[in-house]
Image 1: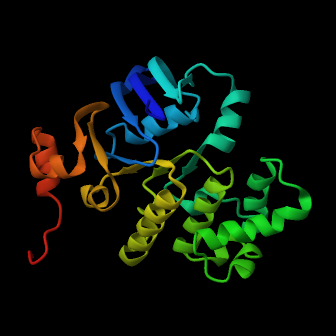
Image 2: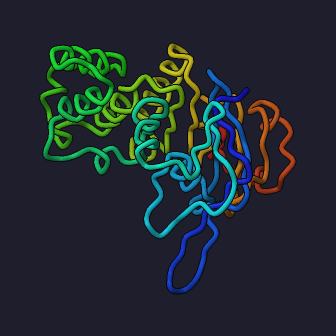
Length: 262
């Protein structure tokens, strides 16, 4: 059985002007130890899909249909108290912009420590666990980083800190929403390599959300291509790259940079 199964998920936004479909009946699954890439342009519904799974939708949005099963447990409609436990231990999320997802008035160590304490770690062990997590994400000088505030770190170091927070509960599934978008090209590659190593070492499942098929090619096992809230193509990465069937997928592939061109 897949670790995560999404079946016919529908999510809409509601306003005085009416209803806007953001996710329109999508289905996919993720197995333990595997990475699924969800790719699409801005507005395709990929981030709303992640927020629907996590139970983190804004007030104007809600899931109106479908099912999200985590190891057989239905998450849609689960009480917030239950979803907090799921987010704290079974599923971790890395957000797109680390500067906005970190609290500017607390040190990195304090923020990771808060996540650690949610998992019944004794007070005497919190600092050691924080340092261990920072070493796991290959943070340069972990002790110094733990004492630093977010604005004192580079973009890549901030993203490593958010990954450490997401890993604090030893999750079975990591959802990474455009984790390299705000970073320069060199740091992007480092973060992607880090995520791939962490996934391989821990055998957790991972969903990687991106607009870049090149990112999918370097990290994912399987891919879901989304457009206007719907899945237009899905399959193993190698097969999809070799033989795309949907015209939109072909356009995304054609838009990828090619070595020696330009």
